[in-house]
Amino acid sequence: MSLQGKHILLGVSGGIAAYKSAELIRLLVKHGAQVRVVMTHSATQFITPLTLATLSQHPVGLDGEDLDEPMRHIDWARWADVVLLAPATAQRIALMAHGFASDLLSTLCLAAECPVVVCPAMNQAMWSNPATQANVARLEGYGVAIIGPEAGEQACGEIGAGRLLTLTEIVVQLTAHLNSAEQCLAGKKVMITAGPTIEAIDPVRFLSNHSSGKMGYALAQAAYSAGAEVTLVSGPVAMSAPAGVTLVSVHSAEQMFNAVQASVQQMDIFIGCAAVADYRPESVQSQKIKKSPEVMTIQLTPTIDILASLNDLPTKPFAVGFAAETQNIKDYALGKLEAKKCDLIMANHVGIEGTGFGSDDNAVTVLGHDLQIELPKQSKTMLARAMISIIADTYKQRKL
Ligand code: PMT
Image (cartoon, rainbow, N blue to C red; front, side, top):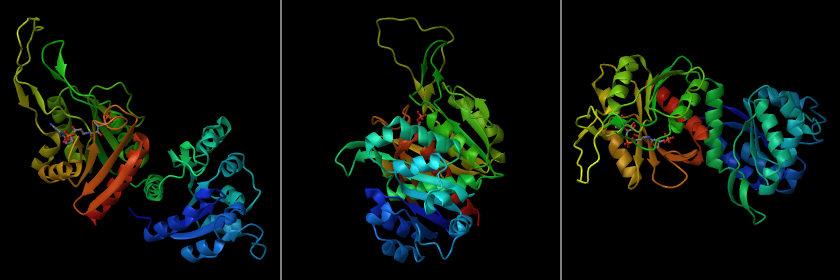
């Protein structure tokens, strides 16, 4: 993950999470960024400008202190590759949503032509208030990225959504957003498998699993948004392919294997997110099997491993696998990374409520040969953006 050389204009507004901006600056600098800070008057009640100036190694922008530099809001907006508001209070979001130019930070946000990223932090009732939600939706409509908030115990003692996202997650999502904005996969061809496969037993029955396709389709959307030409090879799901993505619909593991083999040689990156059946009935009955009181045995035979089969290609794309595990997650995932000779593997703890198969959220550990990044529970859309960003960075490093 790299923010190397990036100019980050950090806007700090006045909520209790403002104290975390000190650590956030350290983290951004550690990832190679140059940081300049603008604080609102109320933010200075929570943390001193001197602390943030020392950590960022730049003077801090404060209201009313720019008289000797009247064009500071323009100059600093032009300097920035991204404006990051963390924490952003309900007041700050409202000001931005309605185009106010009432202080240094709001004028700077209006003058910014670079990406603007907002990390909200506030009381849970303030966050869920329809006025705040309408302001957030308005900002998103203007192209502002909203990262977080997360749910949990709040400084006021209440529990709910409104906490500033963890700082490492802010860095991951910020990097993903910049990578996407910079079209980090422009000119690349990416193939993604998604959804389940279904293996026929007879004309009306089959073996399958609970994959909904949400994770794979979110990856397809994120890769497309990052500039890639995307081919999505999907088992049967109740979703439409993202606009601009080429969909190849299949049913069985064998069909998925054939669809992958048909064009994988032209791909730069392959992502195996599908929950491919590991076994299929040895023979498919041509007529519906009649019910009987006897115990029935179905002989199963292994399917072809689509991901592993890439190793037989004369030129293999950069290969990303998933490992859906219910125990010994990291060890089993590392085993699959080695056995299937992947470049990266997404270790996915499944079988727990709220993540994995079928859910809207997921969490993974990205494992590579010299890499381990935790991506905590979040929407599959956000997770996919972070995964694509990490995949693009690792792919580029491998090619250097
Ligand atoms: O679709 P959702 O409801 O959104 O759920 C997402 C998900 C849980 C399905 C997804 O995040 C996930 O974990 N996908 C991998 C599921 C899986 O089959 O994992 P596995 O550990 O059994 O397989 C390891 C890897 O080999 C995977 O990349 C798989 O696509 C691939 N494989 C497996 C068997 C096979 N015959 N061919 C393969 O290519």
